[in-house]
Amino acid sequence: MRTLRAEGLKVGVVDCGGGLGIPYRNEPVSSPVGLAAAIRGAFHNMDVRVAVEPGRWLVGPASVLLASVVLVKQTPHARIIVLDAAMNDLVRPAMYEAWHGIVPLSAADAVAPVSPAMIVGPVCESSDTFARNRDMPKLAPDARVAILDTGAYGRVMSSTYNARTLAAEAWVDGGRWCLTRERPPIEALWEQERLPA
Image (cartoon, rainbow, N blue to C red):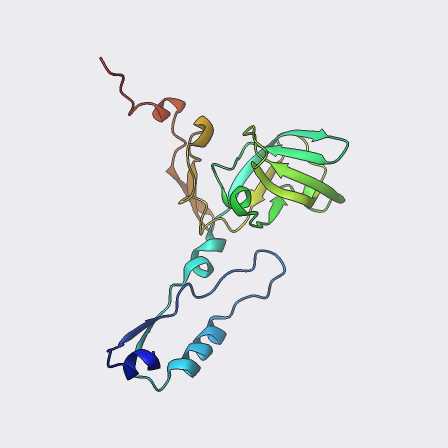
């Protein structure tokens, strides 16, 4: 900013970018107070407006992806837990091995002994993976899990890849909830298609 102003350019706004991230596992928790202090320290005497994009800190923890166990299989190399959610619902782990917490919803499963497992989706390709070597309890078919912190990128990066319809969505506030998007019927995948005469 000083360099630009020294060259005679007017700088009235500084965008500090994505602002605060969120801790996906054991990272330190970001502090709005700490970020504000750093920005104040850098720009306090520069007569400039500051913009911050709250990003993941604001919306990341606001959403979870709920899934059910379809199948559990043991191979010579790993225990594999197959969910009914897939990479089309949350692509970040498949695309760049992003880490999301995965927790069982059953109170009994939550306190059961754990061992390493791969947690995957039902799309038949090797990248449809939510986690590798993740400590998980023994989960039976139909057990439910929550994949955490999906609010920042879950919905906006979801797709109908591999002819899978978009997930249903619900809004929850305390003890109240409502369905905000139903899962479309499979026919919705081709309803906009037209065959030539």
